[in-house]
Image (cartoon, rainbow, N blue to C red; front, side):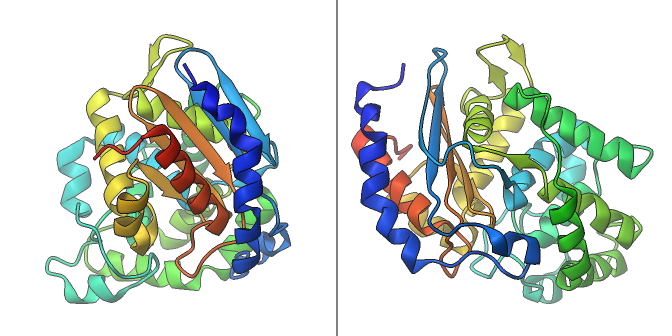
Length: 309
């Protein structure tokens, strides 16, 4: 059951509101530049059928890199661990999420982990389907099931904006294709990946996804095992080690729970066997994480003693 202390969510939002002024919204994807940098919202879902929210919790935003956790789970169910990790590594990196450096210097030349862009692109190429339409339909169905929200879809505007400007991601794809990590048509993979990143949710949807991961893939509402427990655990481990870009180590010390951020300002987090958290705050720091969102999670984790360590 959600701790009654959680009733102070509006107070915590007031405390972190000032942090939004120290961040900037993402502009390298033009469609994301229109977000209100002052927005900050949170929702928390627990396994006892309680949900609380505050602030801009129902403002829609796109998953962006948060989708990497979801497609990793789906690819692991589709292909199995041995195949997935023959193409993508398991190690964290101190480099930016869109860096190509490690692909050039590692032997074998495969992405270090599924949470950086190169690794996520390789993972998305593993999703089973006869066409991109079938593949994105499967990804959407998976997200809708976890959120219990059949209306979830991707933003065509954001997907197109991202596709038109994703030159570095194309370079990553071509490099990996040259080295046998992917065998997909690059433009088809880019089309699928940008649609995956452009899936729209709000904090309440995100908190429900977090709850599924917190319960090792089990939905306590529908009593359905949405993903195998071992796959949920793998995803949560990557969230701890790599989920907050190259600020993951500091986040583990300051907050200490599995979390994944996205450059639209979302943060997905989970507290084992207890609750899922969804946060939105589009003002980002220089690592690509929500400034106010990070502080909000830090305050909450300290208040509720959430750290897994």
